[in-house]
Image 1 (tube, helix red, strand yellow):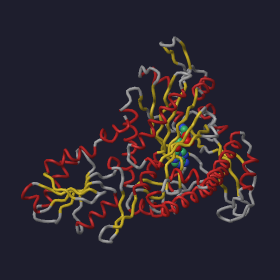
Image 2: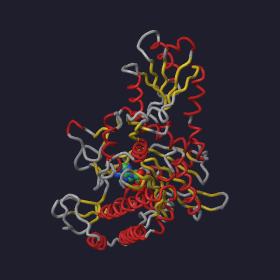
Image 3: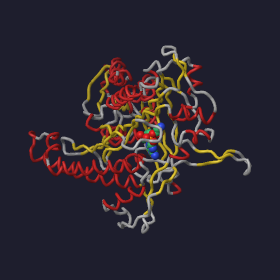
Image 4: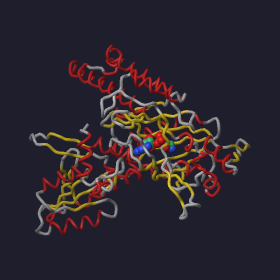
Length: 510
Ligand code: GAP
């Protein structure tokens, strides 16, 4: 995988992601999506939306407001419990998330495991059996045990709210401040992550509001509205994509952890007692969705939570192998009836469902799937970016985005800017633009134009040359293999449809 700094600079250089308000030196952990980034992000969002809403007859979408009545956040538990444990280093005056310091410590041990595996793979060549090696090599087993024990203790201490033990753990592991190198730590304290703001003009009557820290609550408060107006029968789901805001203490790693970000969430309403079954089903469905993009099964794993959020009776992350190690990409949570019951209590309004089959009224249970759109963007972008050495010894930078997500699907390149070739190219662009995002480029030598499209992740380049004028054929170049095929213009539609239609990608998850 490409070096992380290279990923960030490529994202900027090729118009994917810019630091926010950069002319004022940016704003920490806030980013803007540029012309190509916004298209990639939209394609990821659409891919999620279609898989959820279009492919499930019993899932519908909504778009709730970012501002919500402040009691929402009291009822949801966010006012009291949406905290991160933080610790300050007295020398550098830097603030850290205590759990992240411990997790980073474990990630370093994991790197050591990776190095042992790489060394052994080199030594044993084709005979190497990674699974057996990781189970039997004493050093690797020791490292793995250390990771397991450490994360278990962290989880248990956080679960019990035993912040003193979290500090003890940091001290026992001899974790030093990355900035000052010292181990001079304060106590661990809780810090609420919600951003506050005010609604109303006058100072006296202004109402305190929060920017929503998750989109899910907009779904819960609309549960009955949707159920009634959509005549939905349980089990059914409500899907939503939108912005969420968190005052993250550790805001780093580019768009991995942002203060303003976008979530794609789905709440699935089910009868009480069926949550275990649905939880397992949604874990599987969501993993398949990720795998349908073809980014390698080996890059995903489940991580079951030791410490459960205040609303959950089971929770797991789908982790992805980012350039800085396996990290959470998506959460699947069995949220019980916590949210709906709590909103009933705080609002005094019933949020119940009459189940004709069971002949009873109940507050539905909920299984939630929640994936960060920006985090998904980073997963796709970092996986796709490659430096390749070619057969002739030269190198190319290529963004091997899953074709269905690529911001531009087709680039049309007339070989020269004369002899009627641009006219044919422009006509082709006019024809294809109804179905695909198409770009047109006639500047520079064609080799340079191919490189430019490789770096932007465009899966297909269509070149118009003099033969085109004679026999109505073009060459179509595949970004990944760099192979070129000659094809009649009239055959292009069928070829592109085969490669770029949602069904062929999404049906892998059926
Ligand atoms: N409604 C449940 C919920 O919000 P979460 O695990 O806190 O659960 C869900 O967040 C997903 O949102 C995460 O798996 C991650 O992809 C994304 N996410 C959370 N905080 C984020 C942040 N600060 N920056 C970017 N993405 C974030």
